[in-house]
Length: 122
Image (cartoon, rainbow, N blue to C red):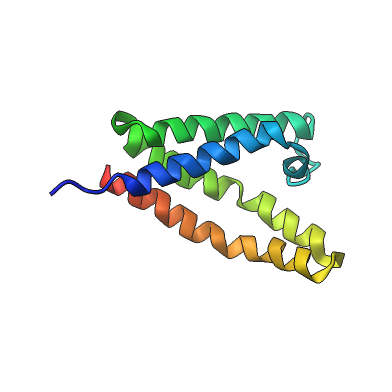
C-alpha cells in the first residue's frame, strides 16, 4: 500500500509559508540573527527565507523529497541557535512573550523528527 504523502505536503506547506513570511514580515526574523554573523541581519533573514522556500520545493516534489526531508531536518537544526537567542533575549520580557520564546525550543525536536520521517518515507 502506498504511503500517505500528506505529512510531506504539510511540511512543504509549513516551510513555504515560513519562507514567504521572511520576505513579507522580515523584522521579527531579523531579531533572531546573532549580531556576530557577518553582514546585515536582513540579508540573513532573506537568505534563510530563500533556504526555506528551496527546501519546501524539494520536499514537495516526489523526486527530491528524500533529500528535501534531510535538508528540512538540517534547516530546523540550523535555526535552533536563533531560537535560543530569542529565548535568552526574552529573559526580561513579559511572561507571555517569555513563555513563547522558551516554548519554541523543545518544538524544534518534533520538527526535526517530522522532516526525517518524510525523508524515510520518500
